[in-house]
Picture 1: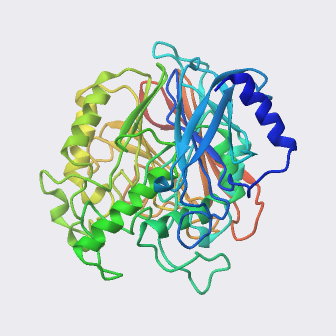
Picture 2: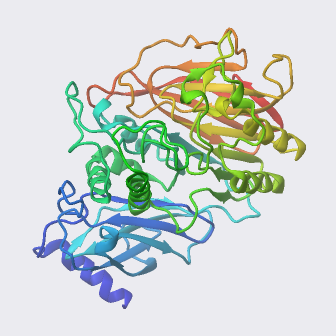
Length: 489
């Protein structure tokens, strides 16, 4: 395909009557940038809520053209090509757009069936030996369609960040709740078609599309992207009742649909993305490979949580992470993962067995591992808990005066648990003095990452039950290079 033909054809498509319904109802996205390439994503779905999960498309495969330019006008193309959107993939496409310059901003779009897609903004990572000019990175999790409007995604787009992380629960799997204004379509999702339709319902939201179009994303799934509180091939309960074969089919369908709807490169969900010499992002998968929860997975004082060899990551991923941390290739090592990492026990020693408190030997190995490897700035980034936290990570949580060896930043939810409250009193803070900040509002975390410091602004909305809430900074905290732990800016 000649570039001139594409450009003129695109201009013609903008003014000529289109022969088919608009197929880009789910927007565009980019992700997993490196110094020379980025993944571009879209899915053709003129009717994204179609019950069969095929988005209103026919069974035919469709050619999709794509363009990348350093100019939003697309006057000169940097990279371009054609890819086939296949019916077997729900007409989704993943383009690895190469030939890009490091540490550069680009714009991208698609054309199919006579229509142009919306334009997305993306960027590449700095060259491996370069720091770049710093990075504004936002991270978020837990967007339950039924619990409120996705205004926080809109506010994230307005920040115009360099990178966005999503740490799980991109969708929720449950059926409609009778007491909710916004309702899930259809019953609890079980099949591939169900999951595709649910993604259609979520990704049709304009606020989510705006956040995807604003910056490249790094994504990892959590439990609700499959089934609440599942662990490996274990279900915490059997509701709805499923045979082992039915559960494995559901799990496989969920992960297939997740890939179909995210800007991911082929390969493992746990992966490493280097942002030059400034930061390395170690993205973890703490669901697929973990041991089953002990003591029924509830909040308990459970000695079995200390059993040697238990793992929330699995042995292969644990070694991969420690080997990556040992490289010390950047100022900041940022571990993007799903569930609460720091110890959070009550006075009787009870903790949440679905969190790292239920896998204490796993946490001990990881923390000792990064201390032994002299990792300069380990920072754990966490979602899942539907509230915002900032925590010092201790060499010995039983001794408050023990050495601080890392930091955890926990984002609140986009909507899950609704509006929340104005409280900032730290739950169980009296028996866990390493927990330094708490907020019950919805929102996200904005980080400003530089060579000498990492600043975290906890951004919150007063409500999600109505549209268009403004966002404000609830608290700002700083981590200084070489000084683990939280400080006021």
